[in-house]
Image (cartoon, rainbow, N blue to C red; front, side):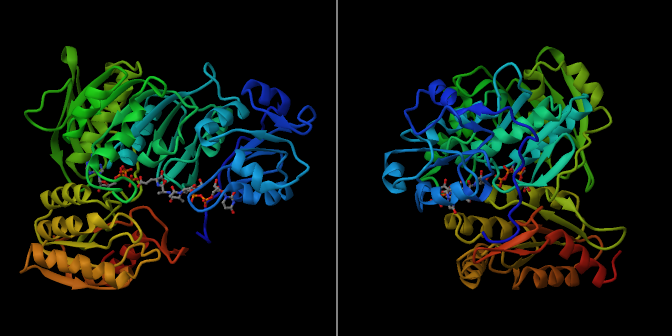
Length: 513
Ligand SMILES: CC(=O)N[C@H]1[C@@H](OP(=O)(O)OP(=O)(O)OC[C@H]2O[C@@H](n3ccc(=O)[nH]c3=O)[C@H](O)[C@@H]2O)O[C@H](CO)[C@@H](O)[C@@H]1O[C@H](C)C(=O)N[C@@H](C)C(=O)N[C@H](CCC(=O)O)C(=O)O
Ligand SMILES: Nc1ncnc2c1ncn2[C@@H]1O[C@H](COP(=O)(O)OP(=O)(O)OP(=O)(O)O)[C@@H](O)[C@H]1O
């Protein structure tokens, strides 16, 4: 990606780590003068490398990091960790080399050590995984923690937060050198509790190694990422390692999808369960009491008569399920339920960018911009919007290029079945032909609901204008996919674009304020 790559954050100060001591601590063979070298950072990518860094040259899917060692040196790297293949590639260079086969397997530990993130000086750490709801649950966790008086940190698909400092994210879950640098910065800024969104890819690539979570949560599992994983079983198995003793102390499992039971059965750590489904046996139950475009009220009932009443400033029963999960994770971390209940009796004070975000002003049809990009996300958001809409429901969406193409037919089917007018457009085409993606979606939507009014409109700026021009007050438009994002990936270039901005502009152009 060539443009607008967000920066990564580091602590302002790092206690230098002597390279010889580092090599001895990890029992790594070292060539060159390690005694006189001091490390002040660690990186696996020259794009993020800073002077004083240890450069970890690792094999990747496309190339080997050792091909970038000369560049790393010119940027100020003071030592290199690499494997046998890397040593063969690098030739003769005047820099201490530490040999480590499979560097990724120990990268988290190495990074935690460099930044001094050790047991005893860490904030409370919460981790959430699942197909949908990770970002939402993490934001809700952070909000409740703030309401409980904690100083908070967050890492999510949308943003990283450090005691009020906000930056846009690159990956959902950062690689461990970035993750450990973030945690060190959080410690520096007095952060006492952190909510971390953990993707399946992060677990497969050991990006959260070097962390020990106080409580982990599982939201749900449904069709997504079947380009990275062979089938749902393999995708499930990628998520399960979060619920192991080496990674976490306790867990909370949501039983709203059938895969929850697999987590309970296979978890190595003690778990409690929660559900928002009627008739499902669980330790905690969350139920919606009111739904409006602006908020969803709920009650959460747990063991020993615990009863918590609150609301989320978001539309949809799935958001109440996420809030319930966040609250139970806090209870499992030792926060008294009565204290939580008191802190959130007036509602959870969270702003979730691009999660069913209503962008309409005082007049005009309700326009919601959402980050949902899977069939299950569509199902939930369409049903939530339908419940609060008297008029017609328009849906605007496109599908990701170069990402799991197998979910496109189901996305088109769910969208067609759940709306009254469908507008198919583009999303991130990446290196795929956007017209070909649209054709698949249109064909599948037609097959699912032959009489549905379907428009194919490209680019998305025109698609949202088409939807707004057709909608009336009382109608609703759900624009699914772009959410909080401020770019579209077109042939590897991040082209600036904001769906929320485009939607507001389209409303204004039609006279709605
Ligand atoms: C498919 C995949 O996961 N790729 C990741 C992988 O890239 P790669 O193996 O292709 O790396 P490579 O290009 O072969 O390079 C090899 C090594 O040389 C280094 N290098 C490479 C080039 C250079 O100029 N300098 C340099 O130092 C690289 O940092 C790497 O260590 O290692 C890179 C370095 O960390 C990652 O950025 C990259 O994630 C890509 C960008 C990605 O998009 N990953 C997605 C699938 C992902 O992880 N998504 C999940 C969430 C999904 C969700 O929730 O929906 C996420 O957590 O974000
Ligand atoms: N509990 C839930 N069940 C089903 N769908 C949900 C749930 N929570 C959120 N969603 C839908 O999924 C979309 C993404 O939500 P969120 O960003 O919280 O999930 P995520 O797991 O972080 O996604 P990603 O992995 O893509 O970052 C939302 O915009 C909404 O459409």
